[in-house]
Length: 107
Length: 115
Image 1 (tube, chains in turn red, purple):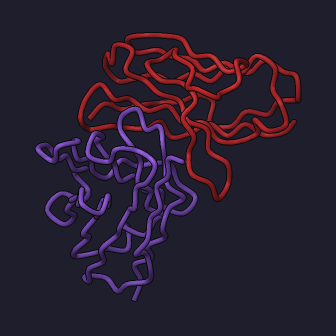
Image 2: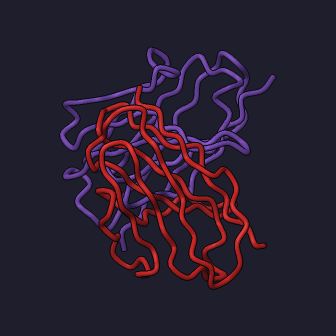
Image 3: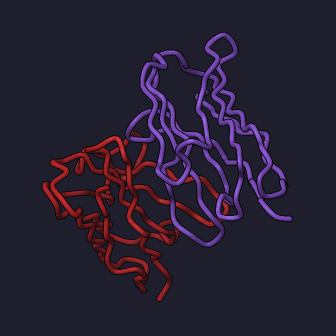
């Protein structure tokens, strides 16, 4: 299986900060990567697909980049609604795998 | 609107079976592949199984292979997950999700395996 490793596991930030989360794949996944946001007690929400395409309805402060094995999710100006856990997920192979998650906390 | 609603969760003893359902509405169910994804308490997301739009292809995580079966009924727009030989480590919230990437999710149903 392709392993997905996110860093950091926890991130403390303030409203207005620029935030970057990294996701590394154990082998090349081309651009077959998605990012999800999950709040406590809620289902995940798709933010980014194909590494850099913004899902409809998602604010433009979210952006994704990367290809191959290294990817980033950037939130340009953190908003109160953005405090949540973020997961990357690869869909290069039929053994879909998620990263372990990055919790974005209020500083 | 586009919606997925899971049901069928509950408390079950180890070794027993449970069948989850996911009712789809607001889109052409027969045109989309569907996933089951689970999340153990306090843990991350795990892809459990996937079925292609036409039912021709099914994929399972190693952790459930031989115990879980995914199926769908296009006449009722419902996705199913038959879970047999349940173990304590199957305790989780189970979500159904549409296609890949997973653009629509249900709210989940909780399965607790405990004696």
